[in-house]
Length: 508
Image (cartoon, rainbow, N blue to C red; front, side, top):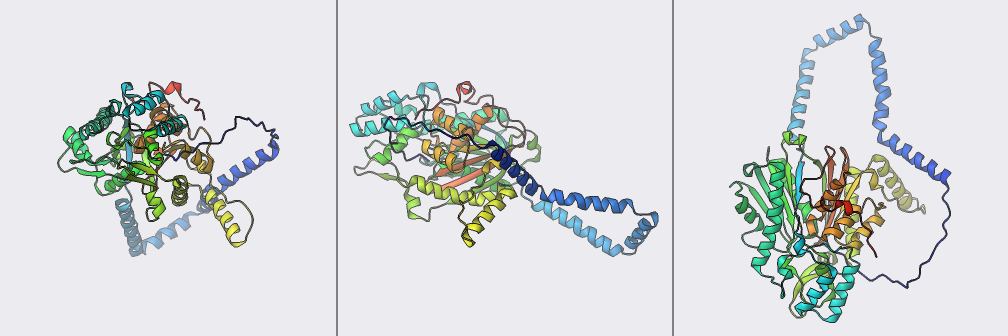
């Protein structure tokens, strides 16, 4: 989801504020009081079980031979009760193991590495737009300003067809872009994992704006000669959050079909969706969207756990489409002269905020420690029922996750989530650097961000990562993963040739 960018006021005057030093004694005390509170509540069950087990052990140690003999006689003459009890335990255990959700493992993922010959600098972008003859001076200046404060760097990539003068937004060129991205990511994934065509039972492809016939999933099946009974799905029109939707769909399918693998491909197509008009709200996507794609290998095979990178813990989906404003805030349409593009509403950030609140309200109880849930609950009760004038308590999601992959839809999106979730700059570093290096790659951006965290060597065994994405409709979707080992970057990660340059300072 792209951002709706507005010019920040600036008068060139720097205001220096004198800040008081904090009361270190109080801040340290409060810090350790809160840590102690979290530990006490989170380990309440363990702390209660310890004395109970101690009492049982003491009682057992005091039992005499006669006490043990009488207990044996009691069980011996109540054989029917013992058999019934044992049967219930065995049946219940069998039922539990048969019906419990199957673990879904992320074996590995691959990112499309765009060639440097397709990169576009700010200067090239503006000059190329001027040479097309489709944009007036006001639109050219508008796009230049958007680029300068977008958070994008000088190495992002647009498709081959957009480098031509005039551009070639043909069906053939769009197919070539799709094939280049999807096949490139998949070939790398198959080389990394050694997975064979016969092992893939499920294929899910998502691309919002390009849906040819035959479908993108059919193109992949034809290229790699996947098996005839594969369960393939092609998701279209679902925006930048469709990558999480595709993961959620694959997860549900893996609960039904045993001992199989699923491949999820996420991409977007720019060639036929460039806007050649002068409506300001439809020009922003031109400035932000760039070429990218990802391919993810999932498995429900227990033997794949040993080589997998992550285990899928939760997926949470929120849809605000019942509200008319939310439904139309990211809307593909024609302008007054018949030029097609995607229009962004001025209410976009507010609608995204509402969708985020709904999503984290559902996600919170699944991931937050009980201590945070109680603090939130008691604060809510105090404000609603006792009219206590205190600020609403914002749960600390840093206690639930070590890493955050926030969809790199634009600078404003990342800024707002950093502020509202009270994250530190390092928590949003992956999102900012992905936007800088690759631009808004739509549904695949959260995978470029995960690739950044891996390339930095920050993903350790047992750590959790939250992927969160926004998209047209309007949707906010989340996926939570847990690292099964200390994760190293994939050998052909597009970050490896530039990771030492990051993080970079992004100027306002």
